[in-house]
Amino acid sequence: MVFSSTTFLFLFFPLFLICYFLAKKTKTRNIILLIFSLLFYAWGEPFYIFLILFSIIVNYYLTILMDKKNSKLLLWIIIAFDLGMLFVFKYSNFLIDILNSLTNLNIRSVNIVLPIGISFYTFQMLSYVIDVYRKDVKVQKKLSYLACYIVAFPQLIAGPIVRYITVERELNNRKSTWEGFAKGIRRFIVGLSKKVLIANNVAFIADQIFNQSATTYGFIGAVVGMVAYSLQIYFDFSGYSDMAIGMGHMLGFTYDENFNKPYLATSVTDFWRRWHISLSTFFRDYVYIPLGGNRVSKIKQIRNILIVWSLTGLWHGASYNFILWGLYYAAFLLIEKYLLKNILDKIPSLLKHIITLIIVNIGWVIFRFTDINEMFNVFGALIGKFGLGNLGSLYFTGILSVRFVLAFVLGTLVSIIPIKVEKSSKTLDLILIILFILSIIFILVGSYNPFIYYRF
Image (cartoon, rainbow, N blue to C red; front, side):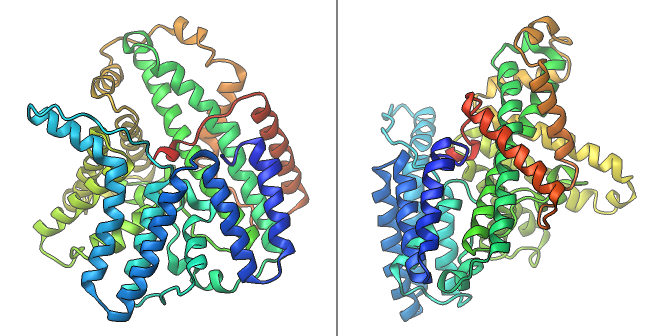
Protein backbone atom coordinates (compact mmCIF):
# COMPACT_ATOMS: atom_id res chain seq x y z
CA MET A 1 0.00 0.00 0.00
CA VAL A 2 1.32 3.44 -0.85
CA PHE A 3 0.27 6.87 0.33
CA SER A 4 -0.64 7.98 -3.19
CA SER A 5 -3.41 5.40 -3.63
CA THR A 6 -7.16 5.61 -3.18
CA THR A 7 -7.05 2.62 -0.82
CA PHE A 8 -4.81 4.51 1.57
CA LEU A 9 -6.38 7.94 1.14
CA PHE A 10 -10.03 6.96 1.40
CA LEU A 11 -10.06 3.73 3.37
CA PHE A 12 -7.00 2.90 5.44
CA PHE A 13 -6.01 6.37 6.70
CA PRO A 14 -9.53 7.68 7.52
CA LEU A 15 -10.36 4.45 9.38
CA PHE A 16 -7.09 4.71 11.26
CA LEU A 17 -7.72 8.35 12.23
CA ILE A 18 -11.19 7.52 13.54
CA CYS A 19 -9.86 4.71 15.75
CA TYR A 20 -6.82 6.75 16.80
CA PHE A 21 -8.71 9.84 17.96
CA LEU A 22 -11.48 7.87 19.62
CA ALA A 23 -8.76 6.71 22.00
CA LYS A 24 -7.74 9.28 24.59
CA LYS A 25 -4.70 7.73 26.26
CA THR A 26 -1.24 7.61 24.66
CA LYS A 27 -0.92 3.93 25.53
CA THR A 28 -4.11 3.05 23.64
CA ARG A 29 -3.15 5.26 20.71
CA ASN A 30 0.22 3.52 20.49
CA ILE A 31 -1.48 0.13 20.33
CA ILE A 32 -3.82 1.37 17.57
CA LEU A 33 -0.88 2.85 15.67
CA LEU A 34 1.02 -0.44 16.04
CA ILE A 35 -1.90 -2.57 14.82
CA PHE A 36 -2.59 -0.39 11.80
CA SER A 37 1.12 -0.16 11.00
CA LEU A 38 1.42 -3.94 10.97
CA LEU A 39 -1.64 -4.14 8.71
CA PHE A 40 -0.09 -1.49 6.45
CA TYR A 41 3.15 -3.45 6.14
CA ALA A 42 1.41 -6.81 5.77
CA TRP A 43 -0.75 -5.41 2.95
CA GLY A 44 2.11 -5.83 0.51
CA GLU A 45 4.34 -8.33 2.30
CA PRO A 46 2.39 -10.58 4.72
CA PHE A 47 5.30 -13.00 5.17
CA TYR A 48 7.90 -10.39 6.06
CA ILE A 49 5.77 -9.05 8.89
CA PHE A 50 7.20 -11.95 10.90
CA LEU A 51 10.73 -10.88 9.99
CA ILE A 52 10.29 -7.35 11.27
CA LEU A 53 8.55 -8.58 14.45
CA PHE A 54 11.36 -11.06 15.07
CA SER A 55 13.94 -8.28 14.66
CA ILE A 56 12.07 -6.02 17.07
CA ILE A 57 11.77 -8.72 19.73
CA VAL A 58 15.47 -9.61 19.51
CA ASN A 59 16.49 -5.94 19.71
CA TYR A 60 14.09 -5.30 22.59
CA TYR A 61 15.34 -8.05 24.90
CA LEU A 62 19.03 -7.81 24.04
CA THR A 63 19.03 -4.02 24.46
CA ILE A 64 17.46 -4.30 27.92
CA LEU A 65 20.15 -6.85 28.84
CA MET A 66 22.89 -4.68 27.30
CA ASP A 67 21.71 -1.66 29.27
CA LYS A 68 21.51 -3.64 32.50
CA LYS A 69 25.02 -5.04 32.16
CA ASN A 70 26.46 -2.03 30.31
CA SER A 71 27.95 -4.58 27.93
CA LYS A 72 29.86 -3.49 24.84
CA LEU A 73 29.96 -7.11 23.73
CA LEU A 74 26.16 -7.22 23.64
CA LEU A 75 26.14 -3.96 21.70
CA TRP A 76 28.28 -5.55 18.99
CA ILE A 77 26.14 -8.69 19.03
CA ILE A 78 23.00 -6.62 18.39
CA ILE A 79 24.72 -4.58 15.67
CA ALA A 80 25.95 -7.80 14.04
CA PHE A 81 22.44 -9.26 14.20
CA ASP A 82 20.78 -6.21 12.62
CA LEU A 83 23.39 -5.77 9.90
CA GLY A 84 23.42 -9.54 9.36
CA MET A 85 19.69 -9.53 8.67
CA LEU A 86 20.14 -6.63 6.28
CA PHE A 87 23.03 -8.38 4.55
CA VAL A 88 21.22 -11.70 4.10
CA PHE A 89 18.13 -10.18 2.51
CA LYS A 90 19.74 -7.34 0.57
CA TYR A 91 23.29 -8.31 -0.32
CA SER A 92 23.46 -12.13 -0.51
CA ASN A 93 23.02 -12.35 -4.27
CA PHE A 94 25.38 -9.43 -4.82
CA LEU A 95 28.10 -11.26 -2.89
CA ILE A 96 27.38 -14.45 -4.83
CA ASP A 97 27.73 -12.54 -8.11
CA ILE A 98 31.07 -11.12 -6.97
CA LEU A 99 32.36 -14.56 -5.94
CA ASN A 100 31.22 -16.09 -9.23
CA SER A 101 32.93 -13.36 -11.23
CA LEU A 102 36.21 -13.88 -9.32
CA THR A 103 36.12 -17.68 -9.23
CA ASN A 104 34.70 -20.68 -11.08
CA LEU A 105 32.39 -21.65 -8.22
CA ASN A 106 29.13 -20.94 -10.12
CA ILE A 107 27.17 -20.54 -6.90
CA ARG A 108 23.43 -20.37 -7.53
CA SER A 109 21.60 -17.21 -6.55
CA VAL A 110 19.29 -17.46 -3.57
CA ASN A 111 15.58 -16.87 -4.04
CA ILE A 112 15.12 -13.95 -1.65
CA VAL A 113 12.70 -11.07 -2.10
CA LEU A 114 13.96 -7.81 -0.61
CA PRO A 115 11.68 -6.80 2.30
CA ILE A 116 10.29 -3.32 1.70
CA GLY A 117 11.88 -0.66 3.89
CA ILE A 118 14.44 -2.98 5.50
CA SER A 119 17.26 -0.43 5.15
CA PHE A 120 15.21 2.22 6.91
CA TYR A 121 13.89 0.21 9.83
CA THR A 122 17.28 -1.48 10.36
CA PHE A 123 18.95 1.91 10.76
CA GLN A 124 16.21 3.02 13.16
CA MET A 125 16.81 -0.02 15.33
CA LEU A 126 20.56 0.60 15.26
CA SER A 127 20.13 4.24 16.27
CA TYR A 128 18.00 3.15 19.25
CA VAL A 129 20.44 0.48 20.41
CA ILE A 130 23.53 2.69 20.07
CA ASP A 131 21.86 5.67 21.78
CA VAL A 132 20.81 3.44 24.68
CA TYR A 133 24.40 2.22 25.03
CA ARG A 134 25.67 5.81 24.95
CA LYS A 135 23.08 6.75 27.61
CA ASP A 136 21.61 9.35 25.26
CA VAL A 137 18.17 7.78 25.73
CA LYS A 138 16.57 5.49 28.28
CA VAL A 139 15.96 1.87 27.37
CA GLN A 140 12.33 1.30 26.36
CA LYS A 141 10.76 -1.21 28.76
CA LYS A 142 7.50 -1.58 26.83
CA LEU A 143 7.78 -3.87 23.83
CA SER A 144 4.68 -2.40 22.20
CA TYR A 145 6.16 1.12 22.42
CA LEU A 146 9.43 0.08 20.80
CA ALA A 147 7.51 -1.78 18.10
CA CYS A 148 5.36 1.29 17.56
CA TYR A 149 8.49 3.40 17.06
CA ILE A 150 9.98 0.97 14.53
CA VAL A 151 6.90 0.16 12.46
CA ALA A 152 4.92 3.43 12.62
CA PHE A 153 3.51 3.44 9.08
CA PRO A 154 4.11 7.13 8.23
CA GLN A 155 7.88 6.55 8.05
CA LEU A 156 8.21 2.75 7.93
CA ILE A 157 8.70 2.17 4.21
CA ALA A 158 10.87 5.04 2.96
CA GLY A 159 11.81 7.23 5.88
CA PRO A 160 12.88 9.67 6.96
CA ILE A 161 15.11 7.67 9.29
CA VAL A 162 13.54 8.71 12.59
CA ARG A 163 15.96 8.37 15.48
CA TYR A 164 14.56 7.23 18.79
CA ILE A 165 15.90 10.30 20.55
CA THR A 166 13.68 12.44 18.32
CA VAL A 167 10.42 10.79 19.41
CA GLU A 168 11.33 9.36 22.83
CA ARG A 169 9.25 11.88 24.75
CA GLU A 170 6.35 11.90 22.30
CA LEU A 171 6.22 8.12 22.22
CA ASN A 172 5.50 8.09 25.93
CA ASN A 173 3.39 11.24 26.17
CA ARG A 174 2.19 13.39 23.29
CA LYS A 175 -0.65 15.75 22.56
CA SER A 176 -2.60 16.15 19.36
CA THR A 177 -3.94 19.63 18.63
CA TRP A 178 -6.19 21.02 15.90
CA GLU A 179 -3.38 23.36 14.92
CA GLY A 180 -0.92 20.49 14.59
CA PHE A 181 -3.48 18.39 12.72
CA ALA A 182 -4.18 21.19 10.23
CA LYS A 183 -0.45 21.77 9.79
CA GLY A 184 -0.05 18.07 9.09
CA ILE A 185 -2.81 18.04 6.48
CA ARG A 186 -1.23 20.95 4.63
CA ARG A 187 2.18 19.27 4.66
CA PHE A 188 0.66 15.96 3.53
CA ILE A 189 -1.08 17.59 0.55
CA VAL A 190 2.17 19.28 -0.48
CA GLY A 191 3.92 15.90 -0.44
CA LEU A 192 1.10 14.16 -2.29
CA SER A 193 1.13 16.87 -4.95
CA LYS A 194 4.89 16.59 -5.35
CA LYS A 195 4.58 12.87 -5.89
CA VAL A 196 1.50 12.67 -8.10
CA LEU A 197 1.60 15.91 -10.08
CA ILE A 198 5.35 16.27 -10.59
CA ALA A 199 7.34 13.11 -9.83
CA ASN A 200 5.04 10.73 -11.71
CA ASN A 201 4.93 12.93 -14.79
CA VAL A 202 8.63 13.72 -15.06
CA ALA A 203 9.23 9.99 -14.48
CA PHE A 204 7.35 9.37 -17.72
CA ILE A 205 9.73 11.74 -19.52
CA ALA A 206 12.84 10.05 -18.11
CA ASP A 207 11.54 6.55 -18.84
CA GLN A 208 10.44 7.35 -22.38
CA ILE A 209 13.86 8.76 -23.21
CA PHE A 210 16.09 6.24 -21.47
CA ASN A 211 14.08 3.27 -22.73
CA GLN A 212 15.35 4.16 -26.20
CA SER A 213 18.85 3.71 -27.57
CA ALA A 214 21.36 6.46 -26.83
CA THR A 215 21.96 6.71 -30.57
CA THR A 216 18.31 7.80 -30.88
CA TYR A 217 17.94 10.31 -28.06
CA GLY A 218 21.44 11.81 -28.45
CA PHE A 219 22.66 14.89 -26.58
CA ILE A 220 19.32 16.69 -26.20
CA GLY A 221 17.49 13.59 -25.06
CA ALA A 222 20.25 12.71 -22.58
CA VAL A 223 20.12 16.18 -21.02
CA VAL A 224 16.32 16.22 -20.81
CA GLY A 225 16.20 12.66 -19.46
CA MET A 226 18.92 13.38 -16.89
CA VAL A 227 17.18 16.51 -15.59
CA ALA A 228 13.79 14.76 -15.61
CA TYR A 229 15.19 11.93 -13.49
CA SER A 230 16.80 14.43 -11.12
CA LEU A 231 13.41 16.07 -10.65
CA GLN A 232 11.70 12.68 -10.33
CA ILE A 233 13.91 11.38 -7.55
CA TYR A 234 13.73 14.66 -5.63
CA PHE A 235 9.95 15.07 -5.78
CA ASP A 236 9.36 11.35 -5.31
CA PHE A 237 11.46 11.09 -2.16
CA SER A 238 10.86 14.55 -0.68
CA GLY A 239 7.16 14.09 -1.40
CA TYR A 240 7.14 10.87 0.62
CA SER A 241 9.05 12.62 3.43
CA ASP A 242 6.56 15.52 3.40
CA MET A 243 3.66 13.09 3.70
CA ALA A 244 5.39 11.23 6.53
CA ILE A 245 6.18 14.46 8.40
CA GLY A 246 2.62 15.68 7.79
CA MET A 247 1.07 12.51 9.22
CA GLY A 248 3.46 12.78 12.15
CA HIS A 249 2.10 16.27 12.91
CA MET A 250 -1.46 14.93 12.74
CA LEU A 251 -0.63 12.26 15.33
CA GLY A 252 1.41 14.49 17.64
CA PHE A 253 4.90 13.44 16.48
CA THR A 254 7.57 15.85 15.29
CA TYR A 255 9.80 14.20 12.70
CA ASP A 256 12.98 15.98 11.62
CA GLU A 257 13.17 17.53 8.17
CA ASN A 258 14.73 15.33 5.50
CA PHE A 259 15.23 17.86 2.70
CA ASN A 260 16.11 21.54 2.57
CA LYS A 261 15.99 22.73 -1.04
CA PRO A 262 18.99 20.60 -2.10
CA TYR A 263 18.99 21.93 -5.66
CA LEU A 264 19.84 25.38 -4.29
CA ALA A 265 23.18 24.05 -2.98
CA THR A 266 26.34 25.90 -3.94
CA SER A 267 28.73 23.00 -3.32
CA VAL A 268 28.64 19.23 -3.02
CA THR A 269 29.18 19.59 0.73
CA ASP A 270 26.22 21.95 0.89
CA PHE A 271 24.11 19.55 -1.19
CA TRP A 272 24.62 16.75 1.33
CA ARG A 273 23.61 19.03 4.16
CA ARG A 274 20.31 19.46 2.34
CA TRP A 275 19.60 16.04 0.74
CA HIS A 276 18.32 13.00 2.70
CA ILE A 277 19.41 14.71 5.91
CA SER A 278 18.40 11.79 8.13
CA LEU A 279 20.76 9.42 6.29
CA SER A 280 23.64 11.91 6.22
CA THR A 281 23.37 12.58 9.95
CA PHE A 282 23.10 8.84 10.68
CA PHE A 283 26.40 8.10 8.96
CA ARG A 284 27.99 11.18 10.50
CA ASP A 285 26.98 10.31 14.08
CA TYR A 286 27.33 6.53 13.97
CA VAL A 287 30.19 5.98 11.52
CA TYR A 288 32.21 9.09 10.66
CA ILE A 289 32.58 10.54 14.16
CA PRO A 290 33.28 7.15 15.85
CA LEU A 291 36.05 6.61 13.25
CA GLY A 292 37.61 9.86 14.41
CA GLY A 293 35.90 12.30 12.07
CA ASN A 294 38.05 15.38 11.52
CA ARG A 295 40.00 14.88 14.75
CA VAL A 296 42.54 12.53 13.19
CA SER A 297 45.34 12.86 10.65
CA LYS A 298 44.59 13.90 7.07
CA ILE A 299 45.18 10.36 5.79
CA LYS A 300 42.68 8.97 8.30
CA GLN A 301 40.19 11.73 7.46
CA ILE A 302 40.37 10.68 3.81
CA ARG A 303 39.95 7.05 4.89
CA ASN A 304 36.91 7.99 6.98
CA ILE A 305 35.25 9.85 4.11
CA LEU A 306 35.88 6.95 1.71
CA ILE A 307 34.42 4.45 4.19
CA VAL A 308 31.33 6.57 4.88
CA TRP A 309 30.57 7.19 1.23
CA SER A 310 31.21 3.62 0.16
CA LEU A 311 28.68 2.57 2.81
CA THR A 312 26.29 5.34 1.77
CA GLY A 313 26.35 4.07 -1.78
CA LEU A 314 26.02 0.44 -0.74
CA TRP A 315 23.09 1.30 1.57
CA HIS A 316 21.12 2.35 -1.49
CA GLY A 317 21.44 -0.95 -3.26
CA ALA A 318 23.37 -4.14 -3.96
CA SER A 319 24.92 -3.06 -7.23
CA TYR A 320 28.25 -1.70 -8.45
CA ASN A 321 26.70 1.55 -9.65
CA PHE A 322 25.64 2.49 -6.11
CA ILE A 323 29.17 1.95 -4.80
CA LEU A 324 30.49 3.97 -7.73
CA TRP A 325 27.92 6.69 -6.93
CA GLY A 326 29.11 6.84 -3.31
CA LEU A 327 32.77 7.04 -4.31
CA TYR A 328 31.88 9.68 -6.91
CA TYR A 329 30.61 11.92 -4.12
CA ALA A 330 33.52 11.01 -1.86
CA ALA A 331 35.89 12.25 -4.57
CA PHE A 332 34.14 15.61 -4.91
CA LEU A 333 33.87 16.06 -1.15
CA LEU A 334 37.60 15.41 -0.81
CA ILE A 335 38.36 17.83 -3.65
CA GLU A 336 36.28 20.54 -1.99
CA LYS A 337 37.76 19.85 1.42
CA TYR A 338 41.43 19.72 0.50
CA LEU A 339 41.99 21.21 -2.96
CA LEU A 340 39.34 23.92 -3.32
CA LYS A 341 39.00 24.93 0.31
CA ASN A 342 40.19 28.52 -0.21
CA ILE A 343 39.06 28.86 -3.81
CA LEU A 344 35.33 28.15 -3.42
CA ASP A 345 34.71 31.35 -1.44
CA LYS A 346 36.05 33.42 -4.33
CA ILE A 347 33.75 31.89 -6.98
CA PRO A 348 30.43 33.74 -7.61
CA SER A 349 27.46 31.98 -6.00
CA LEU A 350 25.59 31.55 -9.28
CA LEU A 351 28.56 29.80 -10.89
CA LYS A 352 29.00 27.55 -7.83
CA HIS A 353 25.31 26.70 -8.01
CA ILE A 354 25.50 25.78 -11.70
CA ILE A 355 28.62 23.64 -11.19
CA THR A 356 26.98 21.84 -8.26
CA LEU A 357 23.84 21.12 -10.28
CA ILE A 358 25.93 19.64 -13.09
CA ILE A 359 27.80 17.40 -10.63
CA VAL A 360 24.57 16.29 -8.96
CA ASN A 361 22.78 15.59 -12.25
CA ILE A 362 25.68 13.49 -13.51
CA GLY A 363 25.61 11.67 -10.17
CA TRP A 364 21.96 10.74 -10.74
CA VAL A 365 22.89 9.09 -14.03
CA ILE A 366 25.29 6.83 -12.10
CA PHE A 367 22.57 6.23 -9.52
CA ARG A 368 19.87 5.28 -12.06
CA PHE A 369 21.67 2.77 -14.25
CA THR A 370 22.63 -0.55 -12.70
CA ASP A 371 23.78 -1.59 -16.19
CA ILE A 372 27.21 0.01 -16.54
CA ASN A 373 27.10 -0.15 -20.35
CA GLU A 374 23.83 1.81 -20.43
CA MET A 375 25.33 4.33 -18.03
CA PHE A 376 28.31 4.94 -20.29
CA ASN A 377 26.02 5.24 -23.29
CA VAL A 378 24.25 8.11 -21.52
CA PHE A 379 27.60 9.75 -20.78
CA GLY A 380 28.54 9.24 -24.40
CA ALA A 381 25.36 11.01 -25.47
CA LEU A 382 26.07 13.85 -23.03
CA ILE A 383 29.44 14.56 -24.65
CA GLY A 384 27.91 14.51 -28.13
CA LYS A 385 29.01 11.05 -29.25
CA PHE A 386 25.62 10.38 -30.88
CA GLY A 387 24.85 13.87 -32.13
CA LEU A 388 21.92 16.06 -31.07
CA GLY A 389 19.46 13.17 -31.27
CA ASN A 390 16.37 12.25 -33.27
CA LEU A 391 13.96 15.00 -32.16
CA GLY A 392 11.12 13.47 -34.14
CA SER A 393 11.46 10.23 -32.23
CA LEU A 394 11.41 12.13 -28.93
CA TYR A 395 8.30 14.03 -30.03
CA PHE A 396 6.36 10.85 -30.80
CA THR A 397 7.04 9.46 -27.29
CA GLY A 398 4.57 12.04 -26.00
CA ILE A 399 7.00 13.85 -23.71
CA LEU A 400 6.29 17.17 -25.43
CA SER A 401 2.59 17.16 -24.55
CA VAL A 402 1.38 20.07 -22.42
CA ARG A 403 0.96 17.84 -19.35
CA PHE A 404 4.55 16.63 -19.25
CA VAL A 405 6.14 19.91 -20.29
CA LEU A 406 4.15 21.67 -17.55
CA ALA A 407 5.25 19.10 -14.97
CA PHE A 408 8.87 19.53 -16.07
CA VAL A 409 8.74 23.34 -15.84
CA LEU A 410 6.75 23.31 -12.59
CA GLY A 411 9.17 20.82 -11.05
CA THR A 412 12.14 22.98 -12.00
CA LEU A 413 10.55 26.07 -10.43
CA VAL A 414 9.29 24.37 -7.26
CA SER A 415 12.69 22.74 -6.68
CA ILE A 416 14.30 26.17 -6.25
CA ILE A 417 11.47 28.34 -4.87
CA PRO A 418 10.94 28.11 -1.08
CA ILE A 419 7.41 27.00 -0.16
CA LYS A 420 6.10 27.42 3.37
CA VAL A 421 2.81 25.93 4.52
CA GLU A 422 3.24 26.16 8.28
CA LYS A 423 0.91 29.15 8.58
CA SER A 424 -2.54 28.92 7.12
CA SER A 425 -4.31 31.48 4.95
CA LYS A 426 -7.45 31.40 2.82
CA THR A 427 -5.40 31.68 -0.37
CA LEU A 428 -3.02 28.90 0.65
CA ASP A 429 -5.83 26.62 1.77
CA LEU A 430 -7.68 27.15 -1.53
CA ILE A 431 -4.52 26.31 -3.50
CA LEU A 432 -3.97 23.17 -1.42
CA ILE A 433 -7.57 22.05 -1.94
CA ILE A 434 -7.15 22.45 -5.70
CA LEU A 435 -3.85 20.55 -5.60
CA PHE A 436 -5.48 17.74 -3.61
CA ILE A 437 -8.36 17.45 -6.08
CA LEU A 438 -5.95 17.43 -9.02
CA SER A 439 -3.84 14.77 -7.31
CA ILE A 440 -6.87 12.55 -6.80
CA ILE A 441 -7.87 12.97 -10.45
CA PHE A 442 -4.38 11.96 -11.59
CA ILE A 443 -4.41 8.95 -9.27
CA LEU A 444 -7.81 7.86 -10.60
CA VAL A 445 -6.74 8.11 -14.24
CA GLY A 446 -3.77 5.88 -13.54
CA SER A 447 -0.73 8.16 -13.39
CA TYR A 448 0.58 6.21 -10.39
CA ASN A 449 4.28 5.39 -10.09
CA PRO A 450 5.91 3.38 -7.27
CA PHE A 451 8.12 5.31 -4.86
CA ILE A 452 11.77 5.01 -5.91
CA TYR A 453 13.01 4.54 -2.36
CA TYR A 454 10.65 1.63 -1.69
CA ARG A 455 13.31 -0.66 -3.15
CA PHE A 456 15.87 0.43 -0.56
